Length: 507
Image (tube, rainbow, N blue to C red; front, side):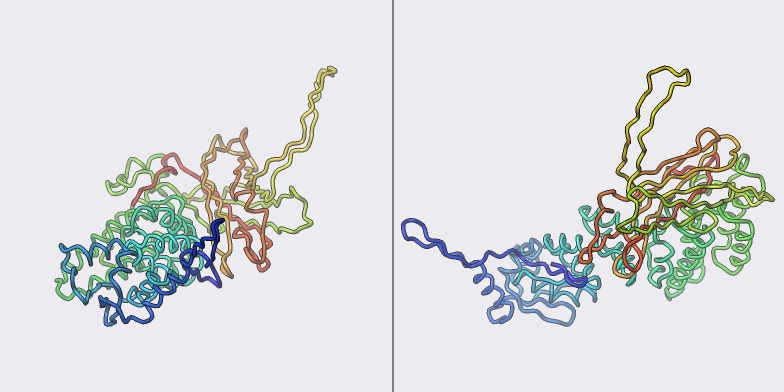
């Protein structure tokens, strides 16, 4: 049961009842009463036979309850091979935040109830996973999956992701949801103080993702630089480490991270600013070498640059030359459709925008013109008739057709120079409480030419899920003050011959 962002988990209890059979015998069901008596053990603590020492707090408990609820406690307290066997006081090593929720966790084993909130979910899940209380793990995972947006707004997303990755593989759905939120709402998460606490392993994985939605590659570098600055502070705080080793350590970290920034996707002026800023940094050598490759790309063009790369850039494959989902107005357009009860069922919203022909910073003012159409409630093709140009009597009737899909139609306007390849990203916005964020992202590689000018991207939102909303259960895909709008952002970036939009690395 969920109320105001809190979930209360309760064990199922049979209602008290009496049933008579034909022989006048009575069978009594009093499970609820028995459970109440067990719960009273927790309240009274009079018959406890073990004390759990957690931090500086002592909790009286009963071995039989702990062992029945947790396989870990069963082994710890009943197996003579364990040092805790027979001890009347058992010390449990928990971090400070898990200590704070331990009373709730212990109480659940007696009464079958626990309240989970955004502030406590990850710590309760850590305890439940550690002591193998599976039903509480499942509860926390389901709660966290449906409250990621709220957790992100409160600064918990990175901590949720770190802890979920440490747990068993059954949390993979939660991990994927957290990773996607981080990728598609990067500007929001990286602006929070908790950003610098992201682990190096996750950061390196993140920087290798093509569907990372970020304003620009230059803005991405600035966030990475903030992260590296924090790493330097942590390394400098190691008093037992000589200065030379500190310098080597931060340089090694920078080398491993900065190689994944895509410098050719920056402008020359942005790369020049990076060089000026790196003069006083411990990792300036790494920056200079990587920026040089980016400047070569702009100087000689993508046709010859691939043969002049350093070995560091070769190791990253085509990702160095592959753009991401850049949300800057230069490459993207936001489209919003008002959803009204009396609106035409198959209406569309059309917009036009222009984007640069390529990423090369040359004296090239050419742009690509795009027409973007959003069909939020299906596509209808009217009935038609094929008429023979030779005026034969036979004519073919084409009936009306309706496609139940939420479609984005992208059309290229103007003349195109041969066949060209683009990466199109469609970001779909949603809302949780009063906060708006990206809930999904579709990425597609498309080829355009003078003969092939249009591409349809269907099912950007599950069609059936867009057909309902209520005050009690608002539609997550509806935004606006009254949750009456569908909002997307379409990103179109050009690919060069060496772009590899299908490459990404696992953690």
